[in-house]
Image (cartoon, rainbow, N blue to C red; front, top):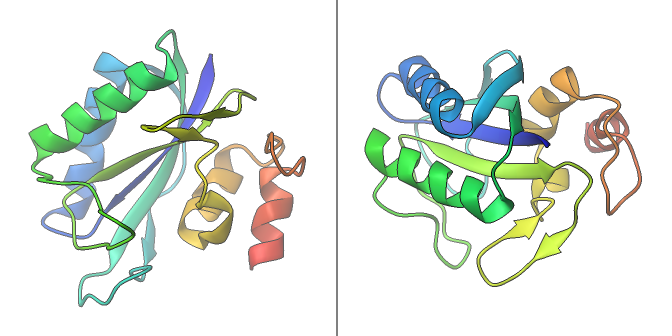
Length: 153
């Protein structure tokens, strides 16, 4: 299954944080088949003096969506993230890894919603994703990632 992940970091050695996360993704989730450039972006949803470095990655995996979620959360903890955002309250972080798309599947349960429910509101997600997957169609909105990005720009 081809999946897309979004990565972000705004603390420490940001490029190193992304590269370590990518190495662990390849070891535990699957073969990286595409990787965007790294994008410097302003914080979204909270105030911080620390800008982010964001990227998107395409991965070929045999893991289930929940398996990916468990793996990404373990990777985040190993890199030093202590907790996920709670109740929509965001904060600085060493690494954040979000499952954006799992093929063309639509999933929703108490632990995971795919496609990521906020991805179409976030330029820092859509810009790198449009770089590596411009023609992929969002399974809910039935528009390409490039179309969604251009609508947000």
